[in-house]
Length: 493
Image (cartoon, rainbow, N blue to C red):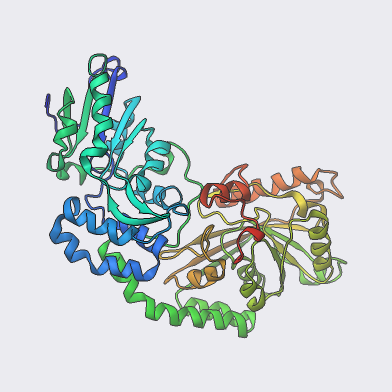
């Protein structure tokens, strides 16, 4: 098979530029030696908690059968059987985040040295193709197709020899003009493919254990959007911890929910703290309640959007009731919200009238991003809020969760609050920034509404250490869910 090497060192740039790298994705790029967590993610996000539990309980069978042999077929079957094919977006909306967190810096650097890359994966194509194309730059992805019938996955993968046929033909064609280099693991060499490589580089498990996590600033492209409910990598131990937490977590989430609904604002903070929630508030602007009471309009608090509960926690931080406006609010949350919450219509004139009316009766919280963003980025701020008043206070929100995400682009919106409250130790860091000077507002300062919106976005970004982007709500939903995120498109929104 040519030259063997235990080190990821290649020849000169000239030889590399004329080479094609054929690499095994799991062996050459990922630090982990197990595929089980990735199928657990598919089982939970596509199939739900019961399928997740079934795959978890099947682990002894998977281990005995061998994860890269018969055990792989078991995982594919349990994860995919009966899942609708045309709505499956886990490979593009959920898995890239977890793949990036598992990428080894050393393996990544070696693979990215090559301009032309062919990726081979043991996982189904629908799980890995998007990541390998978008983040690794693979020209060709050789992976199994999950068979389907009448639009639903059957849970069986096609024959291995059949899927390698096209790759072998391509390698034969390029042998004369290109140096074909292989990169894989010694234990799981695909002899049919890697025998065509002029040189091969093997990666041992011992070597992979020394690999470092790829830093976020080294990502080939920023990870801004991702979907799914699980915030942790569901290994065997972490999944067991989740199942052990759920009974107590459901009780604690009910206590947190009841406290927010039934108790005065001042008592909610201590109850949340006793239940494990960590909330901190920092201020660069001191609210003058007496001054606010003499104004014809309330104060407009403009914040970035992290979860459905943002306005509620801002109300706790201010220690006063506020109103809130939001998009894509479920009917259930609209009914049970402990503060006045109004759903916007996306009709500019109508929404402006609604917010002006709310401001005349008190302070208002608005999230101009129009949707949530989990990563340290700010989406483009809609400028409508800038026309309403000059009394604008930017508020920065930083939210951390350890088990579940309280947001979704493709799931049921009515469960958002439950998943957020289910977290063992959720944290909210609220930064109340300096009120906008009159020179930076529309009415008194003569600024355009876009200038004001961009300025507020910039101030919040600086306070949180987040990067400002021009992405919009529509961009997020098109990437994650394949639609524009309009309320009429999803009945639960």
